[in-house]
Image (cartoon, protein in one colour):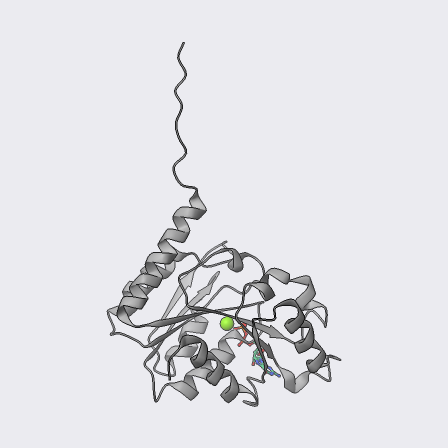
Length: 221
Ligand SMILES: Nc1nc2c(ncn2[C@@H]2O[C@H](COP(=O)(O)OP(=O)(O)O)[C@@H](O)[C@H]2O)c(=O)[nH]1
Ligand SMILES: [Mg+2]
């Protein structure tokens, strides 16, 4: 009896990454910049995006896509700042995937073309880094109140695959016995190409510098 041989076409992940590339191409054609904001739960992703929106919204049209297992709380927060906002509920998935971002992008574009889209990924330091969602920049938010001073070393993929690394909650660094300068040096050793900036989304310290770094990475002024 003869045996049929089927050639495997493309893997699921390859198919996924092609959609991510399609998202990026659409964004490029429309001159829209997208930032993938990643970090553990409670690191301050929403708070930092809100601070950046406040700094940038007079100059740029900003939109927001938020990924969370459930609720639309973060998108509701951003919409209070008059930012067109969409929440993607992932159910049991610990990361955002490119097709969902593509759908959200189509919805957002119905409300006009933004200049910048912040995508707040699901709060997780592992899975989201495996999935390209079509963004131009990955911005990692690390907070000093969880994980201790070895956290960079414990999550190398997060550090290596981010081009901007934000150390947040520096207003409480002393309470958690974190030496921010040492942490910056650890991050720089692990990923010399990354830009590392210490901020407090609560007091606003360092946010102007972060906004400048972000615009430089996005190549816009
Ligand atoms: N002390 C302090 N608290 C912060 C700072 N940034 C965020 N928080 C608090 O940390 C909690 C989680 O913040 P949120 O932005 O929702 O984190 P997300 O889950 O990463 O989006 C909230 O209670 C914030 O008020 C900060 O710089 N300093
Ligand atoms: Mg959030």
